[in-house]
Each structure stands twice: as C-alpha cells, then as structure tokens.
Image (tube, rainbow, N blue to C red; front, side):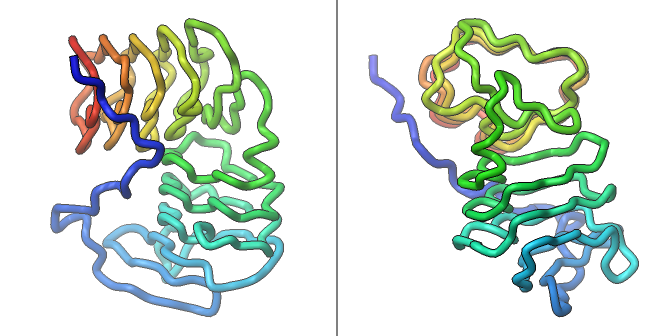
Length: 239
C-alpha cells in the first residue's frame, strides 16, 4: 500500500471565493493597512514599531474582526512585546503573529475566537505555554501531553489550528460539545487514528485533517453544515 506524504507545512488558506466575502476597499493609516468589508474590517499589515500594541476596536467606524495572515508576524518582528486584542476580534489568521521574536504577552478578549495554524509560532509567549492543555479564554492553543487518548476538557470552546504538534502520535482525540469553533488546520499533520467531534461544531475548516497519515475514522456531528477546502487532503481516512 502506498504511503501518504506528510507535509511539514500547510499552504495558505484558500482565498474568499464569493462576492459577499470580497472587500469593498483597502485603506491605510499611520499604524495599519486594512481591508474594509460591508460590516467589518480585516487588518492586513501592522505598520508601526511599538513594543506594546492595543489593536483598535474599530477602524472607519466598523468593528475590527479579523487579524490577517502575517499581518504582525511572518517577517521577524523584533520590537513587538505585548499585544491586546479587542472584544471585536473573531478570527486570527495563519502566522498573524508568527516570528514576533520579542512577543511575551498576549491579552485575549473573554470570548472564544478562531485561531488558525501557526498564528503565534516562534514567539516567546507561545513557547511558554507549557501546561498539558494550554487554554486561554476558552481556546485550546496547544496540547503538550503524551496521552494515547486525548480528551479535550469540557468547557473549551475553540481549538486552534495545529493545537497538537505535528510530531505527536495519539490513538484517539475526543472533542466535547462545548467546542463550537475549529481553526484552519486544527488536526493537520497529527498521527492520530480516530477523532470524535461532538455536536456544536457547524463548520469543518480548510485543511482540518490534512496530512494525517494514519487517520482511519472521523465521527462527524449532525450539526455539521459545511466542510472547508482540502479538509482531508493527503489523508489516509478509511471511514
């Protein structure tokens, strides 16, 4: 039987494909470049060099809901040490703060949000999350354990992309009903045989199970309404 090739990195998430998802304009001020949508703003690049940054709740009168891919990171930002996310934030995209090599404090809003893969990769703050289940504001950002069966704690509301390191090998992952949000690439690259998703999850994101070389079974809930692109790419799923 041919073996699937396990990628060490994932490609960027697919771009918006419907007219409703396209920005109606791109703007810039002294601190940010951003895209304007009909009812929210997506930050695409931080232009400043401050050590401490409080991201604004609104830009141009619209709520800032998305921190775009590589908007603060991805280019060895050495000055940013602390960031505060506003209550309006709903989504932190891939590598948004990655390679911010001085980032040691991140303040989340109280609600759970979607955090995609590698959002905080190669930052002191992320590397300092050493608990078995590193949970912040209801978001499971990282699993550091060694159990054969990983049972996500009840009360967790969101699983970050690649919350289990790619080198980890587990038999089963069980996700409780409290989880309603999955980051892009949530289980990507993990050597897991079985995943049980409970009711509460409505959307399976892009690359959710991409490059899972030994995956045999996934239990999907009746609440599931959509499956993202490449959700099972390079995956050995049998049922």
